Length: 214
Image (cartoon, rainbow, N blue to C red; front, side, top):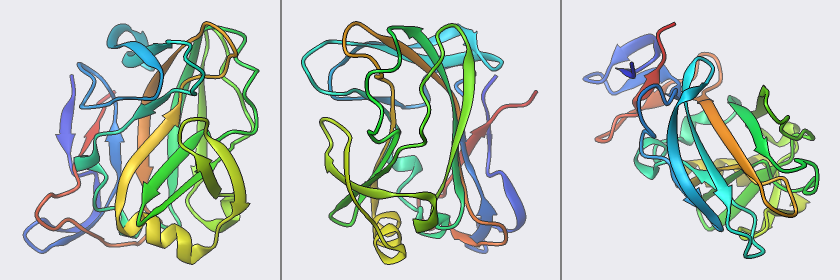
């Protein structure tokens, strides 16, 4: 089942206002507020598939845009201290050749008037879950996203630009479409992990993750 936890390490507690914590979406029993961006349909929770079972999936509409899974804003709106950390996720190829859209953003972050993304240089595998990750720093290869409709990438971004996005994060998207044609994909075990030793201010919202108990 989904279990709510702060995933804190050396935490002072919410009352103290600070904790080193990660945000985790395990999709054990539901979609946990996720949705899609651009031309996706049939977005749903899948109780039979995942690592372990419990994941989300969607398929392409085919209107020319590239679709992405979309995180709930309330869970990511306090991400300023995530610089130097890591984003990790598991992807399942379900339908399509999974190889047509290389060079686009696998992850997009939007905030502070900027859109940035990173291409991790991999594609999903049909019928197999694969685990991917991206370092949240300029050394990780983040670039300007020139179009949220296509995930196209432009110039490299600076540390200051990444911090600007994280300080006012309003969008967190993970690519689901990798095929020029009919396609479907699944997503599981998404985590947004701060750098070791970083204190994350919870404020009024409180960053809370859903951690899977194995």
